[in-house]
Amino acid sequence: MARMKFVCDSERCIECNGCVTACKNENEVPWGVNRRRVVTLNDGVPGEKSISVACMHCSDAPCMAVCPVNCFYRTDEGVVLHDKDICIGCGYCSYACPFGAPQFPSQGTFGVRGKMDKCTFCAGGPEANGSQAEFEKYGRNRLAEGKLPACAEMCSTKALLAGDGDMVADIFRNRVLKRGKGAEVWGWGTAYGSRQAGQPDPAAPAKGAKS
Amino acid sequence: MKKTLMLIAAVTLLVACGDKPQTIGGAKQDASPYSGTGKPYVDAGWKPGDKASWESHLKARGQNSQNEYTKTN
Image (cartoon, rainbow over all chains, first blue to last red; front, side, top):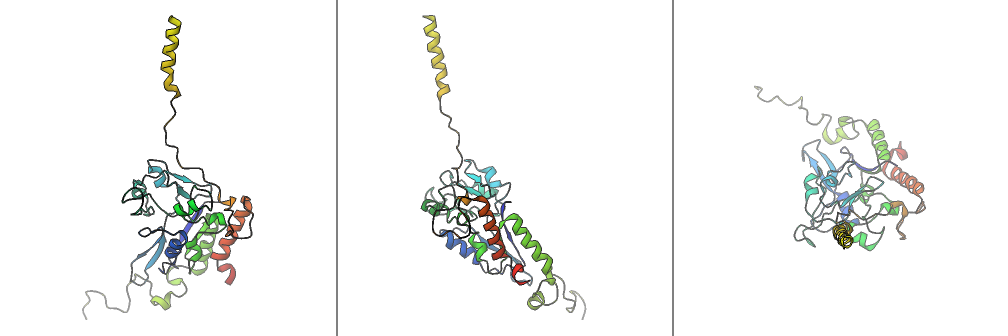
């Protein structure tokens, strides 16, 4: 098996936030913490793109490199997890992460900052699989239940893919080859007109032109 | 007398060697996901403890639930 990976297909994501909701519900994530969120670029402009972002379980994780107490570890499946009993809530991982994945609850131990919380790829943590302690600290361990992360399984358009890297890449490659890209995508013309997003409208008069 | 003094000095100097290391231990050992949870909410179709069975089950689940091209095209 390759490494577990997430891929978000920006052509399919409709910014429904179903993944965010599924994650919060499945892992009973506290208020103020979003392990996953949807980011939209060019919001409101035809051709806007949204992607669902969380911990990408990096192969060479910067959070792991900067942690002063060495609380991170990587499983054999490539999932980056951490031990909350060791975390001191310093926030270095938050500065190092390019995706803004580490979250800090404002309530609980360690004053206002709290111990770091992040996406676990629904793989729990270092406590016993399926135990109450694991659920309370890290959320549900769906991988040990033979399931994939709740966010991806809940995604209505299957924009968010999760699982073995080879399988995810295979699904995405097949998809792109069959549907095309940009205005070639089915339904683009209906949604945005036949004009490619970002291109000038040939029917509109050019700026600065005398009428 | 000299021998005794040397022995005491050696013991005193070597006491530090018995000091326990105080390095950061790192995260606790985590159990493999294929070992299962022992709970009734486990998806059927694979054998807990069998890595190959867990991997093939997860791949099949991923393809069936995420790749609609295998169903519609």
